[in-house]
Length: 276
Image (cartoon, rainbow, N blue to C red):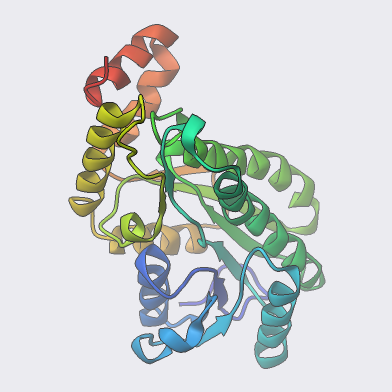
């Protein structure tokens, strides 16, 4: 099905397309007739299991972003939709999380998408349009215990998008966020976990919270729901600023944060994670 904008030829770039939510989005859009390009830092590991081309890209490396974008432009002549999906998970007490891991999380989850956007914008301006969809997280709407750095990276991307979309609307380019809750993917296996140290004052609370977080991901929703949500956004002529996708209670928690007093909301989170 063609995208509504007059110039578009249905070319979609999805960062982090080799597994999880990114792969689910890519496969669904291929079914719908889009020309999809995914990216991975090691595309040779995953190409045989994907129904779409995988290009090499590290969102922390500006040169690799430029090369991948130029390759798509060379093959297709345009990039109509960008889905900034590449990201890393990170857990741990902030005090005990290594500085280099904190920097790595921000480099991938915030600075990476910004680099990708800055690389595609000149091409979209020439086309006089395009759509950029940033995958954030419901965790970005609140500071979650032992996920504080992850929450911070996603919150920063949400706010950056709010400003960015106002700057680029003059060029006919639309940008939005979609914040997923817990989906059944391999993110838990791939994210950085600060080790649960025997001598750590956080040992008991962090250990139990980590087990709960992993259980939530294992019991998460089907990633295809995210793919369907992205498809609806692509089809929509006028996208909203924020979208949320996930279990009702996870989305409802955002509303509660808006209406409850701060300390009452904090107590609710403490009770949820069974923290003192």
